[in-house]
Structure formats: C-alpha cells, structure tokens
Length: 515
Image 1 (cartoon, rainbow, N blue to C red):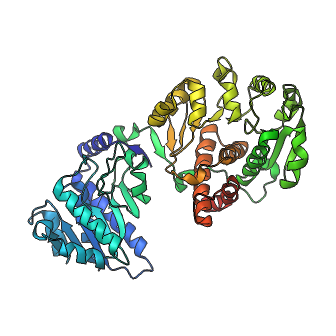
Image 2: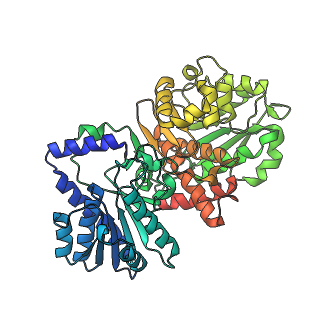
Image 3: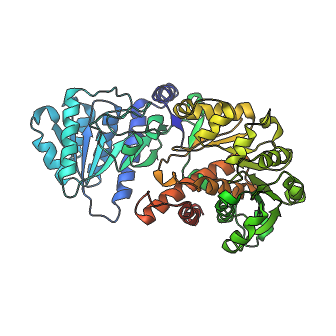
C-alpha cells in the first residue's frame, strides 16, 4: 500500500483517465471491491441489510454502485441520498436492481434514517469524500449528528464501513469534524490517504483495507509516490524462508552490547527479542556484574562479560569484543548502556567496525550525536532507531518540528547520513538513503512504556542477522513490534498494563501470522 495526498490522488486518477482507464470504470472497480469486502465480512453471519449514506461526490458514487451489487446478490440495500438528483444514473441503477432510495431532503425529521440505521447490519459511509473542507455545512452536519445519535442509542449498531475515508476527515491534515462517525473498517481506494494515518483521524478509521481500482502499471504519478504503508502481506514477503534442513548457523548470529547496573533489563529484552525474531544464536555482551542476575532468565543466550567502570561498559571493552564481532552476522549496541565517559569512549571505538551490519539504539544514539561526522564513521547501511528526543539530539532540530514533519525529516536525514532511520513513535516511519520510506500504520499507548524500544532493536538485529538488508529488517521489525503491542493490549484487556515483556511475548503471535 502507498501513502498519498489528496492532490496526488487526483493527479493519479487524471493520468489514469488519460491513459485509457475512465473515471467511470475506476468507480465500477472500486464498487466491486467494496461489495466483495462486505460479502467477505458477512460470510457465516446472518447479515442481509445494508444502508448507505450517499453524498454528491465520487465516494457517494462508489457507495451507490456497491449497494447495487449487494442488491443484485440478494441483500436488502438502501441508499440515503443527500444532494443527488432522482434522475441520477447511479440512483436509477440501484432502484432497477431492487434497492431502495430515500432522499434526505424529503426526510425532514430523519425518521426514515433512524429506522434504517436501527435495522441495518452494515452501514456504508459515503456521504463526504477526500476533498472535504471543515467545518461542515449545516445540512451535512445535522445528518451526521443524527446518525451518530442513533448509532450510539441502538442496542446493536450496524457495522460501519467508511468508503475511502470517514465523512468529515480532512484526508491531508488528519483533522476531523465533531460529527465524524467512527468506522469499524475504512476501505480506501488505490492508496492510503495520508490524513488517515494522523491523529485525530486515525481514531475514526477502524481497520484498514485497500481496494484495487485497476490503475495501469506504468503510471508515473503513482510510481512517484515515496511512502509505502506496511501490512502483513508486505512484511511476510520480506522475511527469510526457514528450510526444514536448517541449523542455527542458517539464521545467523546476533551480537548485542547492552545494559548497565541501572538498566540491566535492556540487554535481556533485546536479546530475547532477537531470538523471537528468528535469529539462530544471540550473544549478549554485558558489564560483568550483570551476568549473574541475567543469565538464568535467558539460558538460550551465550555471553561475553565486559570490563566495566561502576557497572557501565568500560572503554577497554572494545578490545574484548573485537574477535566476537568477526563471528557475528549483525551487531546491536546502545540499549541501556548509560551515559558515562567510559561508555562514550567505548562507542567511539566500536563504530570503526566498518564491515559489520550494525543497529544503533537508545544511549548509543546519544553518544553518536557527540562524535564529529559520526555518520561517516559508522558502518555503511547502519540502522538508527531514534525516538523523537534522540532524533532531536542527532539533528539539533526541535522536538515539535520533528513531530510535525516526521516523514519528511526521516527521509531527509536518511539521505543525508546514508543510513536507514527508524523514527519511532505513533506511526513509526522507516526511511532509506535512496528515498524509500515505509510508514507503520499503528498508534497505540500500549507501546508507551520503558523497554519497548529495546524489544524493537532486538527484533531488528535478529532479522538483520538472518540476512535481511538493512531497510527490510527495519521495516519488518517496526511492523512486528507495533503489531505485538496491539496483541499484548488485546490479551490484557487494556493498554495501560502492557509491559515491554508483554510485547516481547506477543512477537510469536505476529510471526505465526506472517508464515
């Protein structure tokens, strides 16, 4: 899935129309996909009645045609139409297929709307489209307000499917109207509109599905889109095969330098995550005092005990690690290593390992920020995993500026530094030096907990050890991590109680879905 602005989508449709795919055919294709999706949802249910809120734009047309298809397949289909003529060809097609049409202008007190919402199994929201401007006009506002009231009041509300976007969402900025109806599912056409993956619009989107509208393969305007949106299909295609005759060497060795007396759990979380992501061998390099406390919690790991100063990695630890780096497939440093002078010297010495696939996280990033031309000194194609604060330290930019222009800044600095950037937080973005970027379409407070970043870094180094290139490992790791957070929250019944260990435990659930 690709991420698109409203103007970009208009240009794509215009180019497609000029190249032999008429707007009418795009609408037919969209309607077919919507109807097929609804039929899939209804499989093994007793759903039989569909209501559509229909406006004057293209989303209204998609909705009318989808209702027509459903009527032809035996559904009781009704369109509640606003701002369309009774002689509209699409309205007439629905009526000819046996569907019912109610015109909002003749339903002064919304009594018909109320009755149909109360009886519908599915409600398609096609009232407004991607070009909406806020605030909404009074007539539309009143209609949505009433629909919201009925939905909230009915014992069994209909399953709400937003057509391309929930009505009242600004599909560029992510702003929402007060009257916006929360969808259970948003079916987006051809590409994901960028406003859906911003707050507050994201809270109204529900699940996300993509419908193919038949775009030609060689559209320049579509190919020019820079940002992908990660999903299970994309990530499953990135993961390595696991042959039956594999041995631990098949899946690579990950070396992780992490932890200090104050942050001892960071090493454990990262190491276990690397194993859960499929690495064949994980070696944890930790300050020597940590070993006794940690070893029993991860018996699968091998250990390198590092010299230390007051429980933090000593500068001389780089010499101890030298021969271990030669035997590993990927190296992670940074989680929980602390901010002492000895650690800073260790980081400065370790970044000279030029040929080692490297992931830098947490405290490792803050130490990098203090090294002149650090991006030229670390190994090529390194993966950097900053949160907003760490990105601020690396770039000198204000946190608010980074948060407000997250995608653009990740792309800018990935290119400038020559490394893969995983800019964490709500809607984590992964950017590559060659201009590619992938957005993880998840924002959840389940991941707003100490230690979850260590889990992410561990997943990424585990995937890198298995031979994935830097960008693929970062994309797959960020997606698996975010989905694991959602699963952990679902299992616990709330987001507030999710610990990093719960996210770690949920990795296996996501990996099983990706096989």
